[in-house]
Image (cartoon, rainbow, N blue to C red; front, side, top):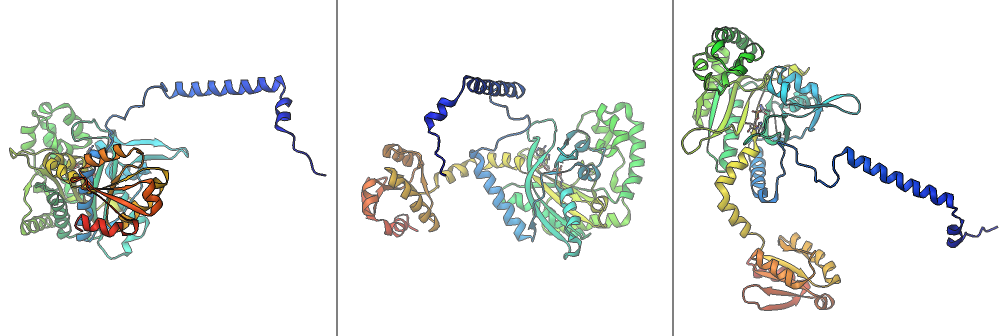
Length: 470
Ligand code: HAM
């Protein structure tokens, strides 16, 4: 037997006052719940703030970021580095074990928290450790050595924000694992130097060697003895560092510490013969390729995994002084073993892209203005619903033929679209109206003379190519 569907009217009339009451209560509960949520997440009328030390990268900087990305891809390919991408979130122990417990990054700057599984995880403060982890995990020691990789991405350090120092920043990095040869270090410095040079930035390399772990242990005993004897003249931070991380005293910028640190024993005098020879050969290679460098006996770097060569690149300012480092790097022969892998030498660098952007913005403002005004020479305007639909197809067809057109399909008034075309400084506007849509034609409007030509839609790409001289 076929059951008859109850009519809508009947359903409505079946609702009892009790049902209605239930419905009202439900909706009141829902509203209460929403209010509670809003209370917990702060006011629901105020826009949440950007976190301190974080920033939005806005369209006005697109030009610089594209320049850097293009330069990075070009140089990585030219020097034989393959692309790698590791996760932004890793087990916290990866960084604690590799960067060192006493370092500022681990002690104060890590974004570290427990995830829903109760695992301690961290937003990566750097990614050399991640690459070493990936090298072990993917058995890359069986590939031809060195394994040369490059990466590009965000890093996170809960540092005190100031000019050029953010809590989220981007790095372009190259790492070379598996070979302990001075030429590897020299090549990496050349790559970093040439990346900056390709962007029109002349830089100066500061370089030092901190030797092997054994060299450093012997040196640290000497250094600690010296620093203790001068303790009362040192700043508070340095006094704390004497026992925790004495090497970090060497790059203290406090006025009161400088004269004492200049007299401190120099690590270079404590290097074993092999480390000394290795370092001298790196310098000879740099001489060979005319990369300018200065020896800096106080350069020790802030991460524990370094051995032998350490370096930083700075942009020289007009007065010849130096600003904050654009690049930092060095050799890390113990890192892979520290993470449970086979002993594997390694070396690499990271370039701070926000700092590079600041220099580019200063150097290239004129170029950018020119590039923006040299954008696409064509604008596509449409009028009417059917024409708008057809526009998407025609714009894509032009793009596939190498012709980029500006457009704003959100606007329906022809006047507004022509105003936009004027603003972009295009030479021609292609107009598709309802009539043209119906008879398969299209208008090409010369922005300077105002002359309009009606052509067959099928001939659009050939005509446009002729007009803009391609
Ligand atoms: P790093 O010296 O800590 O080394 O960072 C490298 C570069 O990243 C710095 O020279 C700087 O340009 C940029 N940078 C660092 N911290 C910040 C920040 N808070 N805000 C903006 N920019 C920053 C490393 O990260 C190592 N992983 C480099 C390396 C690769 N060593 C061997 N391989």
